[in-house]
Length: 233
Image (cartoon, rainbow, N blue to C red; front, top):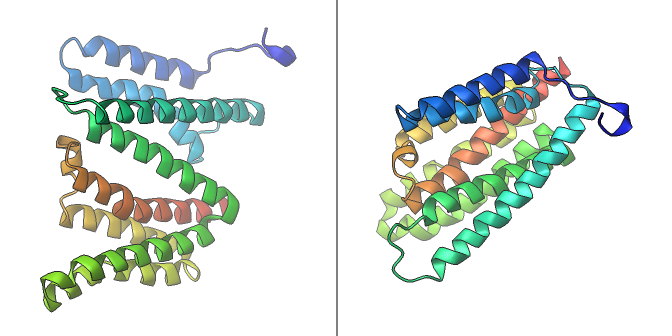
């Protein structure tokens, strides 16, 4: 019996998720690609609940799960930075684990920051301010780096900043349209910069940086705006 007189009983979703995790573990004996199933079973239900597509828990259970998730975030973040400090201070590490660990830590912190802002400001204000901040940051980066190679190169660098400011303006007037355009822009730039390379080469720090700090804000703001509209309706 749990505290407060509550007893735990597995739901159908929990049973299905457990079966997926078990299948993933067993199938890794054939090919380690099946370990992705473990991630689907372990994290898929929680993602569906946060998106509002799965409602199998009451408020008490959700609060407990979110508190546990925050504890996991803190533990994973501390371990990640400890690993970074470890390999950064050692010479001649045979296989540099740096970029993959940095990717995980960056995603952890970035998602926590975005979630905090969404809860504090709401989807529309968060999207607008996030796009303005990152648009300005990338604009300064383009000015510093692009024009050093000539006028044409500088203009091309600045062109990727335009979606940030245009969509920031649109988010306050047509959030749903802005959300869809943000997702489309994220997919377009992922293809333009071949950011899918991060899946096959997580050791490329440049790609990791662009994924987190360029495509990341577009995706996060787009999902936030679409969720905002869905919750209102």
